[in-house]
Length: 322
Image 1 (cartoon, rainbow, N blue to C red):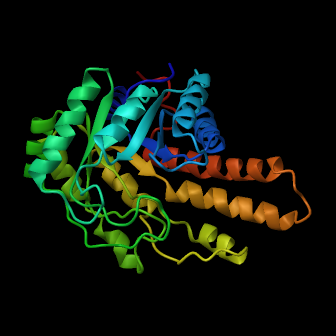
Image 2: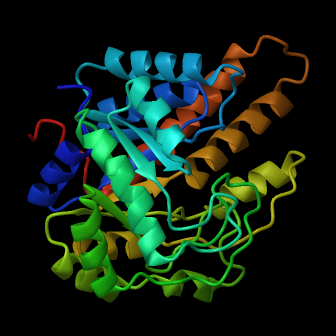
Image 3: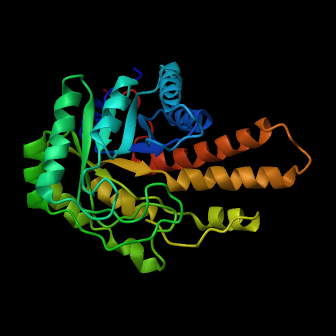
């Protein structure tokens, strides 16, 4: 079993009571890091990319190569997912390049200035669902406001708008989404909360209430990285300038998985691990100009934190399921 849909992965996760990790990548080496971790842990996984965020000038080429790398791991159950598509056209382009699922994030205006009203979110999401389902592609929508910045570059925490269980039921019925990202107290980016109490905004009881209202849809947790301080300290010790902050504790993620979260998005943690290892490697070998050793060290560090997250989410050892 290899490339599959998000709907299939989430159905298996629901039966098994675990969550599938969805890891953002912006180059092919990072994709290999994710897939190596999944192979080592015998875990299903979602590899995801964001439109406009990669190391390559030609996004179509990048997406084609990304699919090819994913397909080369024939023993790994994996979905190829567009994260935070802001336009209908983002989602259509991703489908054209072989993505098996797309997220249309119509919870906010395209310029990200303000939240969209519910009916606007529904209309835009339903349009993408109709296009995607006709092609056998799964769709994730978003309800509520997850704070911070998608890029992970010093995102500013904003006031969160929690998802409402009744609105969630209406949204799912009106759109037909396969997965729903719900705002339950997390924040995007490497700067999440400036004090330890920030992580306490995560509300497992709200996850349970939404789950009860939308039992057939996979619930998704965005903005849930833990921001390990050792990575921040290593990066800053080697010329970085990250603002220390507090993320979501691993045990808090375990708690919301127990309440029904079936996909957990992670970007900042693995990128912090990658960057800390890369900066360390470059500092330790200042006369080295051949990049392969430093990139290999970064890739291995990224795989390491992803393997840890797979065990926390309960997906390790589940690759033979389904």
